[in-house]
Length: 437
Image (cartoon, rainbow, N blue to C red; front, side, top):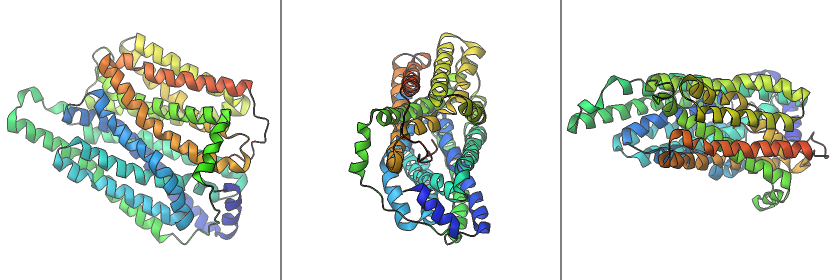
């Protein structure tokens, strides 16, 4: 959809009081979908333990989750065009609620694939909410302040990714270290694992309750926004954008960035539990995830200032180079240096998604919304890179597996340098606002 046109139409006819009210709900949406996504990193060590999975198998959690972005993004855009933002947001929240409730039969079944199904349904709802939230926050105010509002909304997303892993570690991982399974066998072991599975479903049932309340509140406000509509281009026409080298390279880098970021977050808890790293118990290791995702929140504010003073391609290349350096330090060292160098990568991840997006979209003009849809589909990197990283970890070690995200960041550094050496001459004032990764 054309954000510039629809923004003007919507903000001119929506009462100021309703706009302020709706902004609060959008900020809440950013907090919710950011937090629930980061909760996967806590779920990975839990299900790995319960089902005795190797790293490649347990990384299917991320595959099931991020596959939804590839499959649901385009239908979600069509849903928004047919039903509008508020109704679509409510449907997305209800779908998320259903996904959370599916953890109940999953825990009773004792089968890993049922958890993957629950995660896919949950992620499908998140995809719908995300497709709604990014352009909606731009509609709720003056066009000239749209980017400022999005940055503020993304801070709520980062707040969610910081808070949820900490609380989730207490709720989900806290009991793992309290019982020595070596002392259990037979029915006692089966009963313990069943009890641990219910710890997971109780956590997600609590989330389902909160999501249902938010969905009801959003639905009650479905008439408060007067929305403009615009027909969308065909998907096949959008694919022609991949013939543009700059855009195609940028879309690939979104794939690499999301894959690398998610792979590191997925392995981090187990990595910090290693005797040659920090030797932390499961709950404490999971709590350190908040530092990884919190670094991204801090980095957004620092990066915003840097991007006003330096070329974005140079800032992106420098951030990727710092991430590569930290990966090498982590892989080649032990103890505190190894653990906290990996955690620190979150700080440099902060500016990557929006910077890659804006660089890839420069010069697209009226076709920028089509580019946004393709880039959102490239988030499927979170479904592919983590299992590949897990397979390398199984074949070598967790330290050896860091080569996979390192290669991802090499690609991002190359894109930053490419954009610095080949600046886009077309006007960049028609860029669509980037979705949040």
